[in-house]
Image (cartoon, rainbow, N blue to C red):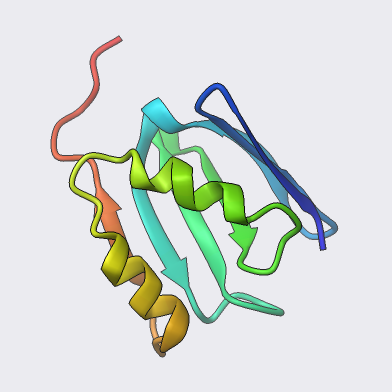
Amino acid sequence: IGVVQVDERRLSYFGPLSGGVIDLDDLTTLELDPLAYPVPHWRLRAMGGQQVDIPIDAEGVEALFDAFASLPGLRTAQMIEVLTHVPTAPVRLWQRNSPRLH
């Protein structure tokens, strides 16, 4: 299944099919992809094209909710709704409004 870890605003996931590390401060979009195999995945994209896909049933996935809640403007009710009534196409739940300058 793979394991999710959140440490100092850095998200990591390493599983049998995919994995990676992404900084929450570099996140540009958050989506739920219900078409991912074998279960829906959170799709996290960051500046520079980095992408990490995390299955919704990964071990430790609960930690993502607190991390996602810190994203400015994220509607947690919408996030819960798409998990309760899984859509038939990918849904963008959050997008950074302006590029972050380094």
